[in-house]
Image (tube, rainbow, N blue to C red; front, side):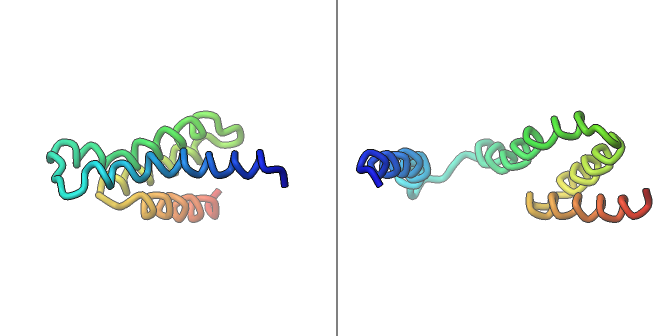
Length: 101
């Protein structure tokens, strides 16, 4: 392997490590305000929605399939489930739904 590629891999590792390490270093021992905690707690749901929602709108075969899955995910998220439970819950609902189609 060329040394250029090795240095590129090392550089990419450093570039991805710095943004992950900085919050731990900068906020060590400090308490975040309640509002900021609330915003950060909802980031995974917002990211999940931004990644999944366009796919719901562009389903070619059965748009109702996407709507049912989205409704199941929204209900699970509204009830306070974590992101993994939301995804697994919507998969379970769609599995059951697919048996009745």
